[in-house]
Image (cartoon, rainbow, N blue to C red; front, side, top):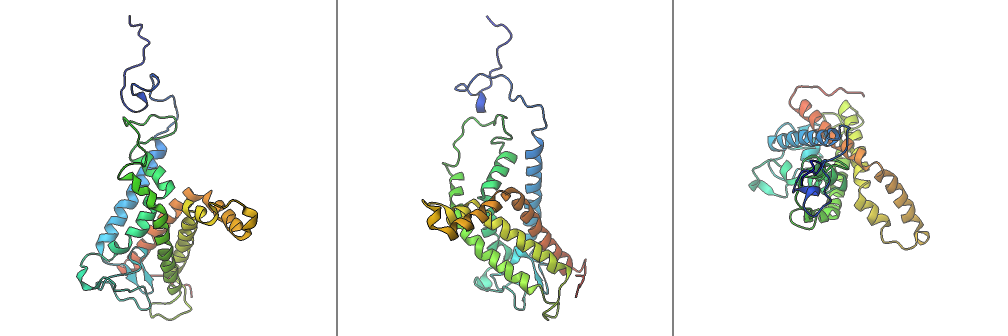
Length: 273
């Protein structure tokens, strides 16, 4: 006999037949949906912007600045950058934007990053959308099946991210020139590039894989004092990995947008000296 107090029969997520019969989907009264919504909105905005800039194939170089989306430039259809990262590895047969040749490495590094996994799992896939909120999926297989099993190659993308960050560091050094390639000058763009490369290195070195490579699998820290100290430094950065992930994502987009404004003639780079 029904008493009217039985929980509704929901057969998905944590409400599947094999789970405990709890009626409400969650007991949270706060705006739990706000955080994943903002995360999804921020990531979606960057995806739209970076896709537009990657396929634009224009306005990515204004001496002495080169957009981080196009560095290094690996095809012959790149703009000539004096002293810049022009490496014509792919020759003339590549007719698309040269940004598509290099962005796969920093993009792969971020997509497989532990924080970004959490961000887009919650923001886009609702897996789960927030703590103590049921996910809508019938079953959970984690990262044991394709395509999510590819997340395990994160360490290799970390190795690829290191030379990319090194090249962007070289680009930052070149930013201490003027439009005639004379050294000893600084513009507003130089500051933008310096801030960007500091955040990129901080985000890269705060990576969980970096922390494990430096101090993982050590049985006795006392026998490896240098690695232990480095492990401690990376650990402190790792505590701020989420903040550095967002800060570096915003800074790299701003650096590209700054170059776009200067290269398109919409803005003149102010010279400080």
